[in-house]
Every structure is written in structure tokens, then in C-alpha cells.
Image 1 (spheres, rainbow, N blue to C red):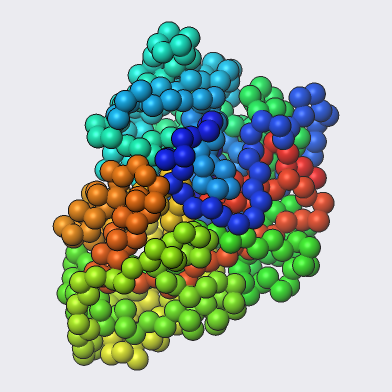
Image 2 (image 1 turned 120 degrees about the vertical axis):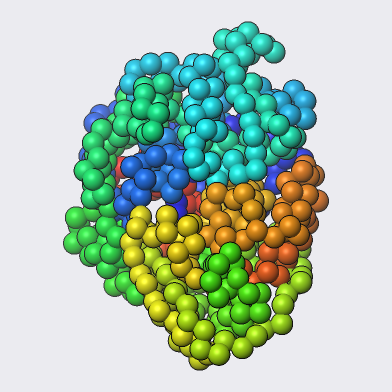
Length: 505
């Protein structure tokens, strides 16, 4: 539901799209080395922690958006990997990369060392389920002190198969680097006081609030705000009201129904790579039958959703990648292998969604009507996201309406296909397992040339859409409420960042 940095990558590896708009990194240059203590920031977030703030799942972006965590690399506005905890890197052979660390300190006062970084990455590879950024990838990380001119700051990362986009992959919020103290309990990773970002998580009050203080030894410069008071408010109207009444300085994911109630100057709309889709359970239940999936797809009218529910703040769904992925439209291919639509004939199904993004229940209600018009009998179930995800992944619903940022996990267009639509994918809400899809995704994943990789990704997209396991509904623009006195909020297409060293009021 749910963003970090590194040096210049060879042109053949710049595989993600050019995205419009400005995006400032939260790294070096934004802070004040010796500035006075600033005011605390007050933030309303849409998604309460779903997994005890583990960095390996949906909570990873909560941590990155609050400026708590970062990894070896990060993404800039063009989807290019840039330095974060790694100051530079180079590819030693097809399967091996050497990352040179910058001088940095964990929030518990210990140094960021090659052994600590290697241990953090190793913990991520052992997580169950695996982080989405590692779907289909096996890697090992080891300290390489003194190797390859890296002095005592080298980390060597080796993959089982060639991975031309490994630096992009390591920008994922789920591959954040924490201090050894975070991994003391084998069953839980604790980010409190163990990360490297400009703000240190000091207290978590269940699923309602979190307190953060400035990390004064942050490598990228001292943050201008003295800390952050975050509130998790699932209700979108309540988030908008909190901003309007001055209770918070920034409120994410403002509902389109509330947008007009905010002053124009406080309403920031950002084109994103997020797509809202209807995901059909292709493993069990009625939508195991391709003909019924095709019938559901034929019943859906994305234009009605974009203009009705989203009031024009979204574009009708055309694929897994939307208009913000600027190269995709010119390469898009017609879906392949689609079944002929069958007759619903009163088939019963359960359609589920979550209310953290307030438009989704409205979308689901309209879909319910469209599906019922086509002859399905639909039961609608709406929950808070943290109470929905595990059941959805377990196949307890016949269909799910979800919003997914296609470039969130790695910035690589192939990674979302591997994690969401392959047999071994860690976030496969459609429970799709199709040999043709797996072959297409595997082929795309092995290509380094940007144009060829993009072409292969679109071939894989066509194969996925041909199964009718996913029906793209709308491509979203996200509305963030930003108080008039607030400066330096980080709004990016990947939704990985929000607060940085230069965020202040």
C-alpha cells in the first residue's frame, strides 16, 4: 500500500520511466547542519500499521514516508537509482555487485558497517513471506572489507541468476537497512531506534499513533523539524477535517469527495504510478473458470469509475501501467489468450475491499451494480486494510478491489509483475498461476537493455491481462493536503517519500 538512494547507473540499466513533475530527495543538502530546533511536524497517515511496522510488508512505506528508514539506494523522479547508504557501486560480473558504503550512523549510535548491512539484507532474504522486491530473486550479501578498492566499506551482493536491475531492487523500502539490534527477536524486526533516516521512531501507540524524534547524526544533514507526531487515521473525511482545522500539517490520501473543501493552495495533486484494479481469485471459487473471469471483465466500465467515483481525478484503466509510466502507452499490446465470456447465471461471489482509500468502497459499490447487471449475485465486504490483506492472500474472497503502485517495490516495471502475478509472487492477490505468464515474466526479468526490457514487460502485461485475473479500473492521481505554513513536503510518483530533512513549518 505502501520509498531510498545511489550514484549514476549505466544507461543500459536505467529501466524505469521518465515521470513528469518535480521530486526532491530527502537526502543530503536538505537539512541544516547546525540549525535551531524547529517545530514538530504533525502528520495524518491513511494506513495504520498492518504488520507491527515490519519493513518486509505493507508497513515498509509507512517507515520510508516518515523518514525513518532507507536502503542502499533510492529512486529519483526519473526512476533512476541514486545513492543512499551506498555512496557508489559497480558491477563485478553478471551476478555480483560491489557497493561502497558512505559514513553513516544508526539511530542507536552504532556505525553502519559492511557486516551490519550484509546481515540486514540476509534477514530480508529469510523473511516469510519474502518481500515483494525479492520475488523470484535469490541473493546473498557479504562484507567485502578491503576488496576492490572499497577499503573497509564494501558490501558484495551476489544473485543466483543475473539481475541487471539489482541497484533498483535495493531501493525498495522493504530492503531498508537496520542495525543488528533490530533483529534480536527472530520472529520480529523492530525499527524503533534502529534505522538510519533523518527521523527516529521512538514510540508506537498500537495502530493509532507514532512519535518520532530527529536523528541528529543523520548522514544527509540535520532535519529542520525537531520531530514528528504521526496519527493513523483510516477515515478519509477525518483526515481532511484534521488538516482543515489545523490539527495536522499534512494529510495523505485526501478523498476526492473532500478535495473541493480544501483551499486550493493546500491541495496538492500528484500523478502517480498507482492503478486501482479488480483482482479475481483464479485459484478457487467461481473465478477459477476463465469464462466467468471474462464475463466479469466485460461487465466493468472503467470510464464510469474515473468520471463518477473519482470525479475526474483519475484516468480510465488501460493496463497494469498507467499514463504516469510514459513509455508504456506506445509499447502496449493487446491481451493474448482471452477466454470467451460465459454467462453469470446468478453465480454468487464475495467482493472485498478496504476503506483506508475512501474511494475504494465507492468503486466496489459501483462494481457490485455492474456485476449484478451482468447476472452475478454479489456480496460486498469492506474492512480496514490490516484486517483484509491476509485473508485476501489466503484466497478467502472471490474478488478484491485494490490500489497498487506498479513501481513502488523496486522502480523496475518487471518486479511488480513477478510479485503480483506469478506462481511464486509474494503479493499475488489474484492467486494467478499461469505457465505462460511465468515464462513471459521470467524472460523480461533477464533482459538488461532498457528498450528490450520494456517491450518484454508489455508482452508479459498482455499475457496477464489475457487471463482476466486482473481488470485495471483507474490510474490514480493522489491528493495530499498540505498546510499553508508547511514547506519541503516530498511528493513523488512512487509514493515512497513524504517527510525529509527540509520539511518544516
